[in-house]
Length: 350
Image 1 (tube, rainbow, N blue to C red):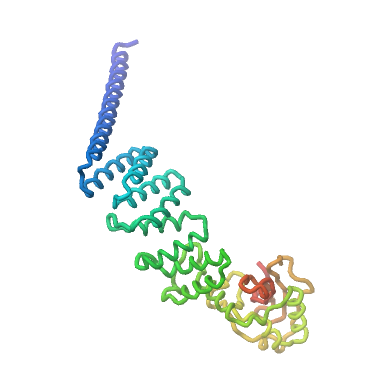
Image 2 (cartoon, rainbow, N blue to C red):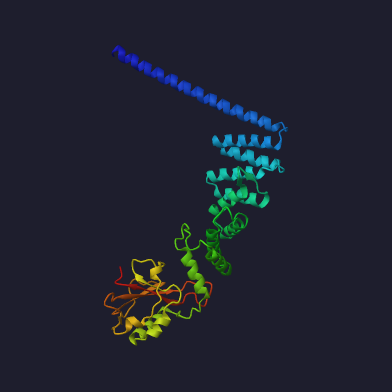
């Protein structure tokens, strides 16, 4: 082996050894500094001579050091023991907030929910760095709670206590949805009505609810309507519409059309688009035309929706699919499950 190569290998090994030793020394020094700092803070806390502000500073430094070191179990034990042994500390809500945060970070959401809720129920609100602790708890509870009943409580409280920190328009809508899930229809309708009364209800964008305004509007309008256009069964609706077409009875067809959210559009349009909402008489399309319909409902029909292919309405778009759907309105058991003629699709089915 050449001498130069041997020296290079030796130097490489030596350098690696030196770097490794230096790293170990640095890590050891950092660990020693961390341990010494924490011990000093613990000792300072045990003196019992600190004023409330000083005690807060020491505890917060101890906790943030543990958090930075990811000593989660030790941090939880330290904070919960301190709160239990010092019930008079005015910052206990903050220490429990930090505890809840640690549980949230480690994926223990049910335990985090317990602590967030405990803070709101048992501790006065506190402002830390300009933030309300109760507000932070409510925000987190709304996100992680699996209980509609609990979320209703959280929505109501955040609307009542912190209206300037949230978009109440969105929260009224979400509150209505939770009431609906719980079957509390009167309260759901009240919340939807309040949502619709907000000045930005028509323009607000709500994540997961792109048609929030239209859906709420239709529900309220349907609730306030006579609903006298609905039929007991799909068969009854189908037969009535076919008979009216055969007799060219446009008045009957106009009566059978839903009086809330009836649409007439192409297959690619959005049902809630402004130009899809139509209020026209069938008369002008029947006059002078020979209207026909399929003997059976289209194969795309299902237990909740049905399509009847018809044609001959105009030279421009001859084919219309009449769209029937089952009424989803649990608020009124006498109406829920009936059928309505809800709209028209122009052109052949895509």
